[in-house]
Amino acid sequence: MVKKKQEDAYQEFIKGLWRDNPVFVQVLGMCPMLAVTNSAVNALAMGGATFFVLVASSFLVSSLKSWIPKQVRISTYIIIIATFVTVTDFTLEALVPVIHKELGAFIPLIVANCMILGRQEAFASRNTVKMAVIDALGMASGFLFALFALGSVREILGEGALFGVPLFGADFEPWVIMILPPGGFLTLGLLLLFFNWVKERKDRLAERLAEGELS
Amino acid sequence: MSGKPELSLKGSEPSSTRLVATLGFAGLLSGLIIVSVFEATLPTITAYKAKVLKEAVFTVLPGVSGMQRLTYRDGHMIPAVGDEEEEDVVFGGYDADGELIGYAVPSAGPGFQDTIRLLYGYLPQERKVVGMEILQSRETPGLGDKIYKDAAFVANFSALSIDPEIVTVKKGARSALNEVDAITGATISSKAVVQIINRGNQRWVPRFSGAETPSKPTPSGGG
Image (cartoon, rainbow over all chains, first blue to last red; front, top):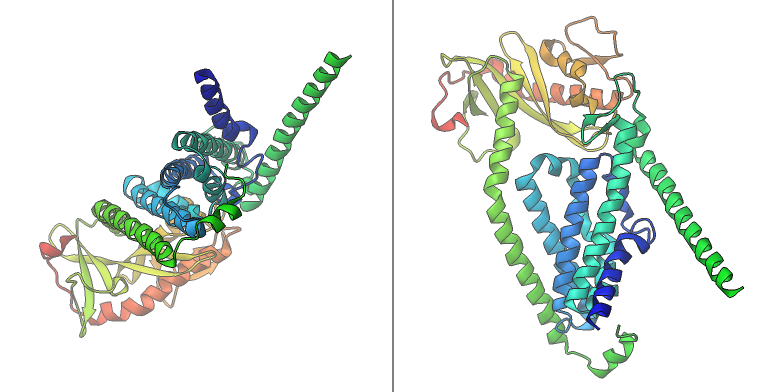
């Protein structure tokens, strides 16, 4: 029984990180995804901020679920999310002003990230606090991972650097388009293609195995 | 999973008072948290902004060892007391003997994407701009952001005559003292920077030339 529970928790975590990855599978939260992934550091900072907001909100929503009347649940979730976002905004501005300046308007916009509200409505408000936090940790890690994947690819190609450290010689001509908005769409499209290809391959493999067992 | 939330709604319809109370309480709690965090972080944020501004003043006015916030009132440049609007304040830069060398003038205006705020150094005796630093901008990464990342563009502003006014020319075509080489691919951002400085000059240069200025920086206003 205990083992079963652990298995469940592990499944909930891995679900967000990989199988139902909010970006690559659910295609949610595209606004920050495309806007701030022009460098790896920005992507990590945005991912970190979203991580905190999602985990904290899921925890609170799940703990308060029996007190929140269904009619006003969405408004209450938004208040909770907005509070954590504002707290994050001020904290980042005080602790890492340089990164805060780069991310600019996109920190307050975390409030409108549909992935966060989606997790509250679909999961946190219907599950135990522990499961809600595990689900949030998984989804937030998945989001962070996706942002970092996009940010590092775009920075490497667009600036010839990673974390501001030049990777290629002076002869490298950066593909400026990669750090501009079209580069975001381009990279995201290619990554989605890649993840779908991996998934399809796995499904087909499973199918073939099942057939083999039957015959 | 509750499955069908509609069913449970019918079972226990909460009163309006309960709904209002819930939202009101959530709002109150949220307000309290936000205000406390705001109060806790404000000193750090203000200190950082002041530090950035101070460093910018020393960057745009080479050779300056002291500074003071100044404002214009009744034909004189006087030390600012602190409650002026931001756009009514410039920074006087002084040498080691307390003599005024020049002014660091903040100015802002529309860029390609959003407002650009910058600070530039101005020497009234030579009628020259001697330095420029962008304080805030959201220009396009890789193109428009060269207004502060491209050292060659920033160097345009190290000895720039303001008469009759500053103009942008195509890159490499600079021939007169009042001309700035625009950045290839970011003409709008380059022009915006020049216009913002011209705007600052229109506002402040007549005031500087007509005004007497306090020479020694007062200790309290030293910023």
